[in-house]
Image 1 (cartoon, rainbow, N blue to C red):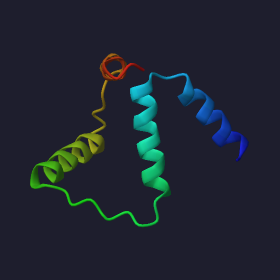
Image 2: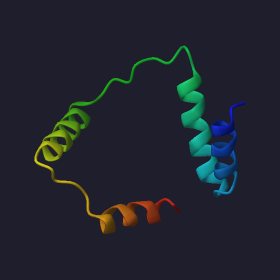
Image 3: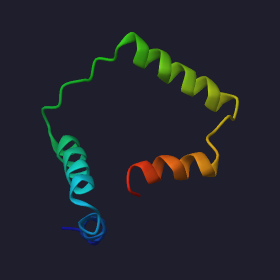
Image 4: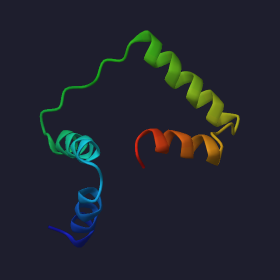
Length: 75
């Protein structure tokens, strides 16, 4: 195991169990060689397009908005 991966795992161990499981799912998904592509719905495609357009206009979430999202996830 690399030092960076070891550091990341130690940080995740300090998080609540549900959050640890979320990280584990992401890591397992990234490590899976047989991952099938995700098929997006029309609504998801529209949301992504709207987000990309906002980014092109340099319209980003404020620090306060980001903190609120993090707080909802216990971060």
